[in-house]
Image (tube, rainbow, N blue to C red; front, top):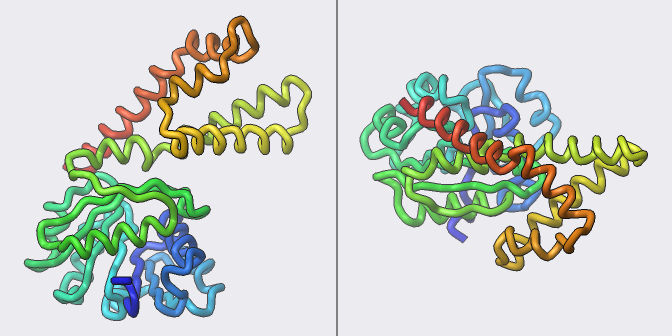
Length: 271
């Protein structure tokens, strides 16, 4: 394993950063004692402090100096400022992984000293439960081994694929933002069942499991979603009635527009 003996650092321990740390440690890819985490906002470190193995600090240079692979888990608006504070601590033997939405590799690389190895990743919040969907693209100075290491790290908390950078905005709009599209769907499905008399807890359990099951069928059977839908919709049956309501309400158009708008915002952040 290329990651054997390496130390992993995180700069930024908000929801995404802390979710990745938890997921990666739970997967056993890194033991907590090999993980460093820093954030200038000390309260965001409080939860990580409960794990005695993870080394936390408000000093980003401390994390960089002690880590072989450093994940920049910060908002795109402050990425440039964060890099300016650590770039002189980033030596040739260190790999930088940025998960800042919308920020292109060339814009990240030019903020670092020449030759810095950078990988760009777009994960999502489902890393918390080891079901993240992540896309990875390789910087100009990074090696294929660097990319494989990144794929291994993010595969430990879900699925990870490599894509050309020009598709990263689409990834951001689809899987990066995607969980936020699905949570209201689960809630709304449960609301319908509650309206029909089911208790809230049971309704949420059944709605969430339905989404999990449908997703697994797509991934594991390789069958087109349209075919899977047809398998459930009997002529003049209950399901086709529900499908017609969704189609009349423009559900496909709404989801398509959501992905496109989120992708466009990612492009704006990268300018």
